[in-house]
Image (cartoon, rainbow, N blue to C red; front, side, top):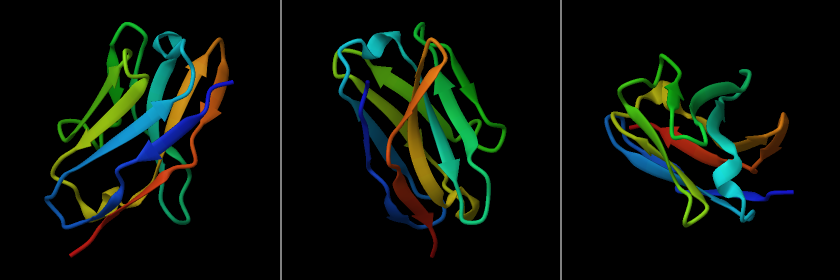
Length: 115
């Protein structure tokens, strides 16, 4: 079972940037499809971005062009570079790992975009 630990969240002004990291405990990290999801207060969890084993990426329309997902398999780490942040990006961001239909989740990191 893989453990996921997110970091990098915080308070940022609109238009600012943050970089989230997700450290995975499993040595077979490279075999997982990885993703970032987010959940705002009172709202359902939604997909932000995913990256496959082969490096193909997918983004929600709301973050396309502003967020970039990447992975470093040598470091067992997933990243989310977030630029031009908006107040509506405020949420808990959760790291997800999926393999053979089984999903694992981190505890999440809070991102707050406010002036």
